[in-house]
Length: 392
Image (cartoon, rainbow, N blue to C red; front, top):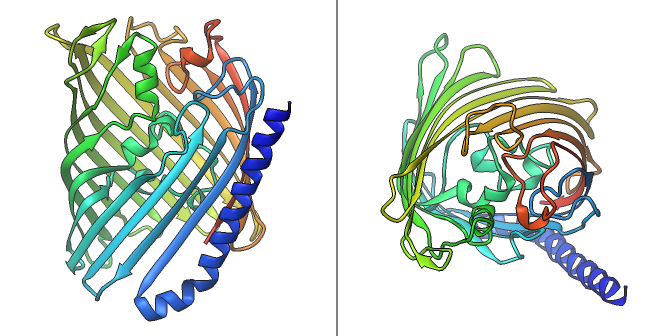
């Protein structure tokens, strides 16, 4: 008990120091912006998870856990009307994942020639879907967890960005045509060792070592003439290799190729936001000289949120995915993940907020790990997530 108490005291002290540092940065932000043309933003969030059924997201949720926190700090410099520089550092802990290692989320140089053409290079955010490029900042959305079927929390750093470049722009179609926002991207992706894929591979006896590979894709969004309504589509091709991976003590390189074929839509009107996304993921994976195994994945979600007052936002979403690995039985809990979520966010002021969510999950094809479920998996998981955050 004394060790646990000491850990809690240490964690509280670290959190308090970080909050004071963030508050100081917030107070200095206006002066920095004026003198150095800087935008400085930070986010610190801590949460508690408690549930029944299975332990979720590599945490011991059935016992209740406070091992869920993250912080980020970003700096953007507007050199002139065409050129910007920016970077964001991030640290996080989620049970056995993250380990509070400090990492670079993104760092880029951006040149925008005009409204219809710009280019960005460096460690850049991958512009695919509605929320991928903003999932790195907890304060942006009303959700403690975005839908796991499309935005897996345990793969957040991997999906958020890539090393390379992005071409982008907006093409106006006239008053009755709306606007086309487009982006094309390419480069290289690296699988982070402190995320879920390494833990998943470890459960089958594989040690991966370094894992990376090329990425290419595009995203096109039509902001329709109907105010607040947008539809879009995205495509991504990723080919990862772990050349020094070891399977049951035998050196066998791992190849993991997959594609993303995605459609999405969003309607925002006043206090109401409605979003939906659907995705097909053909996955081809294999060790050594063996033929790559085909494992199709199908995912989608629908969500709605409403700002009931200036401080309180309520919302709900349903997400679902199928990942057919060993068989094609849709009723097998190992092949599907179906989730119903209801939540609320309360903004105390412009800096401090809190989130509360309830999750009902049927199946365990995503977000569940044998390492924290040694007795096997149950079909249903119930989860309560509470989070408090500070942002500027």
